Image (cartoon, rainbow over all chains, first blue to last red):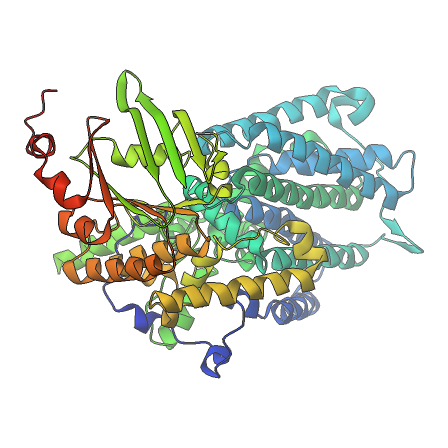
Length: 374
Length: 251
């Protein structure tokens, strides 16, 4: 929220060092965000994913979780665009996953799988556009509730529309992905498909973030009325971001359907809606990497905690609370903190979980209380 | 340049602004003053579409519909706020770039599919934004996050952003509020510099000295109505104005 925080007491000069280009005297350049090394980061991410899979992932169930992580990461990246960048709390992400999945399943009865996927995405995008146009002008909480209602209605429709979604929304024998001569059959085949999916999703987010759209979406998120008086089409930008994020979810859903071969409305239930929110909050909304880490946490940590048998949920819950309190910017915030500490500069947090965000405010209040006591 | 006639703003049963008519001619600097609650800021909000209002409003002879922020912006009306509304999640230069026109190559499709054109447009916006920041003395902080700025610098950044939007008329809501004398002088100097470039300005403020120094003409509001207008020195001598400020006005 602009203007709501206390200005930093340290002189602003200490917070920022001129970039390399600026120091060399290049005046006509671009904002810092354009100098992010996203393509390198994405390449490194791919290498890490491959390395970890080779070294640590063995056995069918481990491979299954690994693929699930990548699928959730795609849906969570969509949520990052909608909530993290555009600031709209959409509970409809799982509905869009379900829509993508059911459409792909239904369409692949009559057309080749790749066409079914493509049409499924196009129809999902149109549905998302209609929903966004209807709902985007509602305020924060109303938007959250409205999208939650959409998700609820969606579940009912998929359960009861037998002709489209099968009895009780159960669809079996969904054909596997088939592109050109490549037919995905094993977990490894699907791993490659999902890795490509995540990389494409990361690339799209990266292109969006290194464009005027990010700047305007943040402006529209943090102070919509100010943005309107600057001529920024607030509603339209949020519609665009919602549609993009929803398409990500639809991709994730249709991949899931083809991977598992069976879907039911419970696959995309309210648990997963909250799960996607958790991924975003735990991982952090300061950058697109946050939700990737958050999705990993959501998929893998409960599995590691299984050895604690009946204490599993208590430990998991405790862990969530500790992370939320200690790392208001999420797990990805650790990197930024370390970097700023090493450069010896003040740490300025950003994003809804960061600067001016509820969690950040809480952390500030706690540290203020502590410092005034000593 | 700016003509507002019979502007009304109602909050429930309260008439916050009542039949206010006001005009600002090209290159003129008009001060809008009045005691707290007299409707000055609400009037600016009405013109920029921040609150629903009725009445007629025209810029440069073109009618602008009230209650639509985008319309006011498109007509060349830019503004600042009583508490500086800068985006702390963005850098200073990005804040300024929010206002730089024209809005081309800004959508999702050009971000993905027309990148060279999008980047070229961004470079253009960037260099103009940096130029604006150097004119107001914030060039060194162009890449710094706006969250690190002092209150005074935030105010200046906000003014720079509005100026970068190439305003036909700039509306300032209490540019000196919360600033010390030195900072107020800085804001005054910046406005004086742009005035030489032919800036048209409507400024709401409390500080009589600041207004007298800056403005060609002063309009006084009390309880949502215009009670006096004229040259600053004459207006301060007006008995009605003195009464309004001292609270002798019958309510």
